[in-house]
Length: 274
Ligand SMILES: C[S@@+](CC[C@H](N)C(=O)[O-])C[C@H]1O[C@@H](n2cnc3c(N)ncnc32)[C@H](O)[C@@H]1O
Image (tube, rainbow, N blue to C red):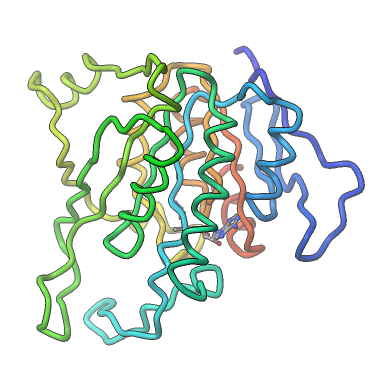
């Protein structure tokens, strides 16, 4: 197999602590790399060496900013909605600034025909859509991911939340993006694939390395990767979590670079990648 055009490196002068980052895992034989650190810093460092971009596709599942001390239902029990300090923002303005920072770096890091997928809910998806548009990305699709067995709404004051939105966008209006139409049609029993995808949350087997509050199902990432990349493409996930994107990428013969800020999730990712 070829290797990716960009090969991640341990940064020179790495300092541990809030402003440092490190290459926590690498397996060059499979083209798999994981940074432990803040994605803004890591992406800035990569883009300094690759001003014309080096990734074919980016999948991003950013903090949703929904940790507002409210309640939800987990396994039939009332539970806090808070995901962790990484999901706390001082307000909409701070969330917008953060979104603008990582999305503009993502745009720089995409190759000219590259695409980005960003997932979210009502809490953040409109901010993300607005920032993508203002940066000049070309919006391609909004996918509705329907969860077949959502938890009930305990307050009985809203419809039961049962979907997430995933926006698919190309680097800019000149990009000739890849869409593997035939592969998607085949997956949909010979009919055109629509933009509503019914996919169950991760199965127990996918969670056996440990728990992450917002882990995505492998089936979702497999579909995204098959739809928009080819063998040997290089995929970036700036909010890697448990590296679901990495597991699916390697399984499908793509290369993977993940970035994750929380030590526990870096360890979880390493177990899954190894
Ligand atoms: C919504 S979760 C992603 C879950 C992932 N898609 C999976 O399947 O496991 C977002 C992740 O981004 C991480 N994160 C939050 N802010 C970050 C930042 N500035 N840089 C890098 N990672 C960050 C969080 O620790 C969390 O694990």
